Length: 97
Image (cartoon, rainbow, N blue to C red; front, side):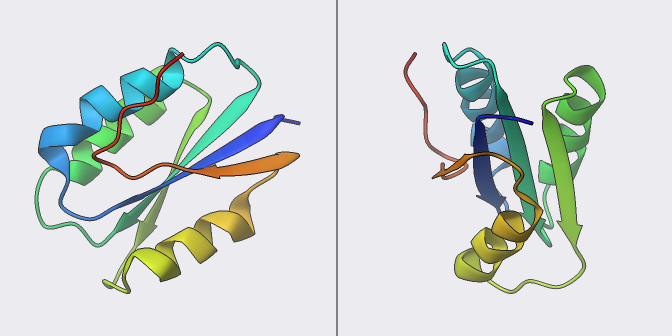
């Protein structure tokens, strides 16, 4: 069971995703799951998310079939979260170690 569930709502944030995900994955906390909720992006966000999901088991992609907004995406992420703690990171944020 992960210690921290990091929920990242994503809607058309392809230019920022690689840096965001790399910053979360490089954090000192290793017992994490990263729940990326793709809120029906129309850019290349989903492809980027799936490439991270393939290469790191801590990354899980939840793909929504309609656009519901950031609050809904966070709630969906919380329903999947298994961590003792929950953290929210926006797709255009960077997390320091």
